[in-house]
Image 1 (cartoon, rainbow, N blue to C red):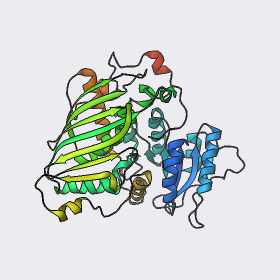
Image 2 (image 1 turned 45 degrees about the horizontal axis):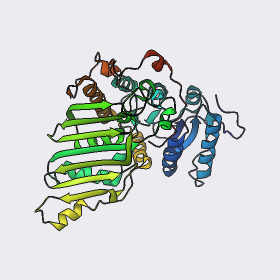
Image 3 (image 1 turned 120 degrees about the horizontal axis):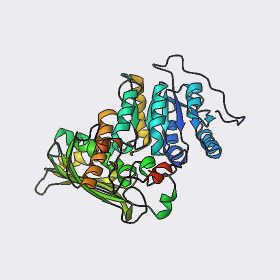
Image 4 (image 1 turned 60 degrees about the vertical axis):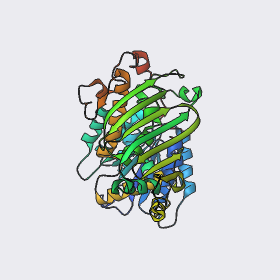
Length: 412
């Protein structure tokens, strides 16, 4: 129900023309760190096209703090950010506000029901990673979409910095030659206290370990740059943390274009880094960062003997310098909504990343290669990333102990 704070604003109702409203009515679900720190500034940056009308959270204190943060950002007279009505119930918010866009920043185990509820209410969805916990859940979300919208997109902000856009264009054009070798690395560090949050490290509430919760951003960017994969071989282990899922995983991957690559996801690495490197015939392109990148984080190294300063200068000089961010991706989401086209971070590209993770787990747990398209309905890895493997599937007490907060608290 709406929060009882007397400063809460009454709903104004739907826009007169839901196909092309003057400003898209936007609501957020979950008001923790990721929503306040990343989604709220993104919405504020696009306040000429998006109006933040509501927020949902079970924790009244957290909800009130978010509403104050939104109020502090304010806005100009023509395009105020809010005001924001507070709710503790998603369905009540959907009925009262009829938002055009719902932004979801709750723990992963809640993404499926919340996404489907929003889609069924006619709202488009932009959801934190992972969009859902399995291929079966992804297909359930896809079944709730409609041609021309609403659609559900997952946060994949690393695709949308100008450095990534530039690298993708160079690779697609053949300017760098054919990709041959790739490395994708998300080696981070999380201590024991991190996993004391009840929903972390559990299959039913997080969907997996660093493969799903941390490395998914770099894996998604790698696939965005190199395209479809065809085969995965992998290993995974619980080396330090007492969790249901893995705390480290490694994979070998073959791409449709012929390139071979490695993927490493870890939460055991004191020297934290996120890295992608692609060796092509004409040059190596490498990105090194942690939680986000700018043009300066991309390095182009020409092959020995290539003596063409102008060509190398083109590689190293993107037309713009836009950091990867939620703000950059939201621009594409809002444009797609206006045009009623499938937004970035949805459909085939989003499913391809999730299928890659399912294949990584299956390959690691079965000790055999997995091909793209192999995991279909009836395969245990279609229904859950652990695939009911006896060494990895949760025991009944763990699976039923799904306590959680109603918001994603930490940086991705």
